[in-house]
Amino acid sequence: MDHFQYRDGELCAEGVSLLQMAEEAGTPFFCYSTATLERHYRVFSDSLDGLDATICYAIKANSNIAVIATLANLGAGADVVSGGELRRALAAGVPADKIVFSGVGKTRDELAEALSAGIMQINVESEPELNLLSDVATSMGVEADIAIRINPDVDARTHEKITTGKSENKFGIELALARNVFSRVHELPGVRLRGVAVHIGSQLTDLEPYRAAYERVAEFVHELRADGIDIRHVDLGGGLGIPYGEEKAPSPAEYGALVKSVLGNLGCSLTFEPGRVIAGNAGVLVTRVIFVKEGVSRRFCIVDGAMNDLIRPSLYDAFHAVIPVVAPPSGATWMKMDVVGPICESGDFIAKERNLPELESGDLLAVRTAGAYGAVMSSAYNSRPLAPEVLVRGDSYSVVRKRMTVEAMIDMEDIPGWLVTPEGKTAERGE
Image 1 (tube, helix red, strand yellow):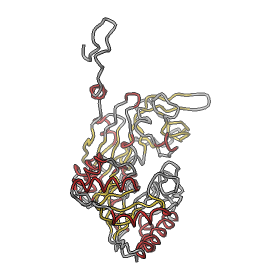
Image 2 (cartoon, one colour; image 1 turned 90 degrees about the vertical axis):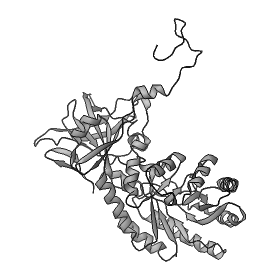
Image 3 (tube, helix red, strand yellow; image 1 turned 120 degrees about the horizontal axis):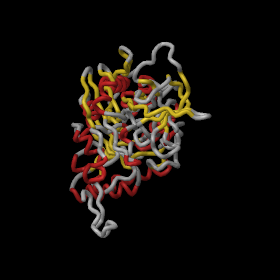
């Protein structure tokens, strides 16, 4: 469920018309619904009732500090995968002792920053990282609370670019090697073992891979305890899928029931790192029709949103529903068309062969389920400024990220002094 509904023929985010927002923010822009974010967080939290659970929102899904702050106000922690995300979490008001730092390539500086902040846990993904963290923590005179991420070699049955739990993936330590790594931790200074971590991928729409992975985690915890390593915490990651179109996805309640059945008697506190399931359906991308181009074999609706704004269709062949912001009148003519952007790439598309009402230049379209992995993955390709982000709460809205300007982009660059104009003058901006 989300809070993007038609009112008097206009698509609204909660109580605010997207037409109204487009007048202020311009297009394209991302719009997020506070009510949807809050509802999805509470539904996920309720599914874990009875467990000793900490929910750390995966900032990589949507890193706008207003979105993070919205969830932090509900009690969410944060799962971060870079020093930049760590700073965003802290800036948004997430307590340091509710932040988990994941990722395969943490640098010395990032580890030192995390230790200085006093975060809850660092998820170690390799022996070299473990050794580096020990060195950094020892040099700082502190102890790092860690979980070691294992790779259970479970196929998440999702797109190959977002699966993370198979042996050929770069994430975690394979089970065949992990036991020895766990046994080494007590020999290293500066690190304190907190638990086991696992994360098998994103956009899972089948619970069976979770069951397989969690059963292996439970078995591994028992093996470690038999070795005298008293594991009392497990980080289960995130990845629960959502419906982008007609596909079915497990509910958080079904997921919670699975967790309880497999791990409920393990005697461990648990950490969860949901991202997409909270933010995905809480956002839309609003884009304006430039013109409709009629071809012999295809009809193209060319819009001002592009792959630099929403790369998921190009990168993953992902489906996003596209609907008109103004509801078509009864009896409107519907036709198939490709919704494409103005970027100089054949891969620049938002939707292909979609049934849409007859459209004209200036009409607005809403691309649904764009709240996760939308703005965070955008770029300035073709020197297109990053789109603004708008957060709605009831009848109010606020631009929570302004549109970048081309001038600001150019101001970040410099022409070196050895480059001169044809007239022999140094090519300096503004002359």
